[in-house]
Image (cartoon, rainbow, N blue to C red; front, side, top):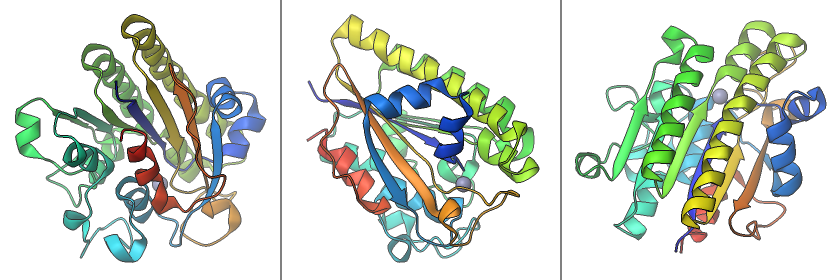
Length: 268
Ligand SMILES: [Zn+2]
């Protein structure tokens, strides 16, 4: 049986702040038990280029996403992780859920995750798109978590991407020093607990093998905001925890554009 993948994208997460806060027990235990790699994101440290790199395995110059407007992007010829898993094995089922429309909404400026309409019509590719920019990420992330738990439980998709942006929004509004940012991190951590528990139940019930992978696209300066080349803005990470299987044997150092291929190799 092939390993099932859940990649969770936590936008704008400063992992060190999360670990030191004592308010992110799931992140902390996954980091301790899983494979851990520090990543250094390329500049500009913006969500558009960052997620495009992590999800498609491309450098900034390859995907040509230079900011969050996505104008002139090359994403149509840079398929995302879910699509690549499908092209590798056309029995693969995929799932994506995100509250930032450029990641998943075909009517918007992206999307980074390809629509793949034929697979969507065949229920082999399910996409949940919400609009956290309009309705706020605290609410929208909770919806994303609810729908994702349901989808994982009911369908057990082979390769999934689930995205949370509450922490990034709190960072922009209040900065990353102080209670607001940590509170948002603790809400995201609670979503992670539910996803992790759902995977554990599946592993016990169906003897499946899962790989839970966590990453972020950038950090923030202390006052909130990102895009430049300070170490705190460029700092990212990968936590990869095998559930019902061993952790992956990945290098201790690799570039952000290598993550997608490393994940796909676990399904080979
Ligand atoms: Zn971001």
